[in-house]
Image (cartoon, rainbow, N blue to C red; front, side, top):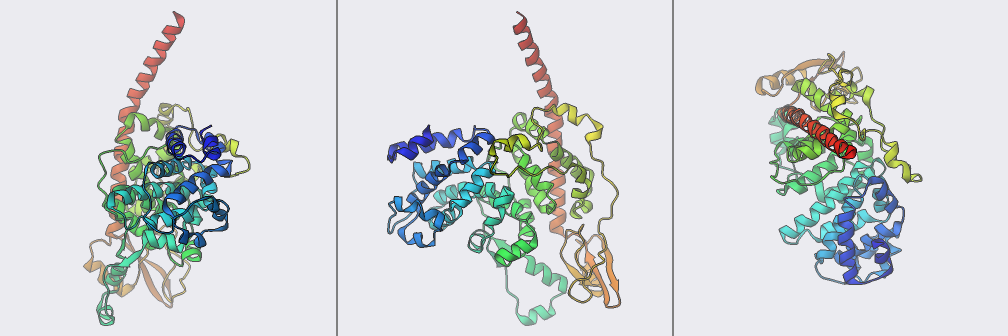
Amino acid sequence: MVFNNLLSFDDIHMKRMGVAIISILAAEISTSGLSDLAKDPRRIECFLSYVADKCLLVSDVPDLGSALRSYMPQLRLRTEGAPIFDTTLRFTLSALWNLTDECPEACLRFVRQGGLIIYEKVLKRFADQNEETKNHVYTKCLGLLNNVAEVEQTRESLLKESLMNFFFLLIPVKEKTYETLLLSNYSELLFDCAIMLCKMLRHPCIQISYFAAGIIAHLSCLKDEIWLRNIQSSRESYVKLLGQAVCNWQPPHSEMVAYRSFEPFGLLVLHPESRLEIHLWAVWAIHHILTRKETRYVPVLCECQPLLSFLRLVVSFDEGILCAHNLQRQLSDQEPRSINTDFHDNDNVENNNNYCVKNSDPMKYLTTSSNVIRPQPSSVYSPSTDSDIFSGVPALCEAAAGDCFMSESQQTQSSRQSSTVTHVEPVGQSAEGVAAFVGPDESQLACARLIRKMASEILASVDRTLPTLQSTSIHNYNNNRHCDIT
């Protein structure tokens, strides 16, 4: 009804009240309800037009795609001036964020209706506004883009050169002269080249940094050839920065965001392309929300059984194995079905997705030994049999988390100089020469230590909270049963 009124009447007061109501109700609607709302393209279109009306100028129109031009003529865009940050814009951004939460249909509709182009313009228009206003807008925009990144069908649309450069511009910390490079140790050179600044991942506002990291985590599940095809850049430097950023976060005292479920985290950590730094972001997010609202989120976690098994597996491995990225193979027998993305049959999206078992008994799962995945012995670093295009340089083995290669003499020298090299095993021996893969660096080990610590605290919270929740549930059941009898 509220949407129908917004579509039928062009009244400033109705807009302000309507978007406020929808922004609140959208957070309470089920995912199937959100899917139903997304079926009508005019609804997302309506909210995008509100955002454009407040933020865009006439000069922005030529850059807009054909999908936007269909409804842009209805707007009264200004020729100049700063973006208007008022109650209507604030609630509209919140409403779009909530409408796309765990709703692939709404995310797809947002992308198809030109939402990414509008949001890119909005972000750039607010870049020179006061810090408080800018951070507020950035947080809401990044939150929605994080929702888009969660969906397999819309994830790649975020790999745009202009958008990635704006948020995740990689800037070398220092430049080296040619003479300095010649004198540098090879391992030191690789380390210096890997040190980058990423302005959004290291943003002082934790909310902005958190959602930027979430976008990178999901985009890093795309294969390297997709990255290279879209932005001519490898994901490796982004993933490394992701891990470093999370390790440096100071958790805020208050809850940053509410979650419908932990299903997106489960799909992320069990994705075939996932790795340690991506796991770390997901576990940090779960740890942050669960340690602040145990009674609400422990049952939510226990509904996602493969995710709970993943956490138990994390604490059972040491840091070296975590760095070696063997968790997916251990969990292959519990690989979840991907979320239903058949947008022609939206009614069954929630019912067909059985990753999180709704209305299950968490205690039954936790106490069943068959549900506990036990770690199997495996080699931390597996030798590779394929050679790289460079002579004597082997291809990175599937299990390896690092990306540095050295010759035998360089490896020996580096191992004496650096205490971060914990294990070296010769790889790809051939007539052309011998190369070696260097073990995890200090950054990777820091990620592994942190993820084990947080996973342990999450599981301790589960073990501490579940008995109380079960006791309360039984007590309430007995009281209700008594009332029914009398």
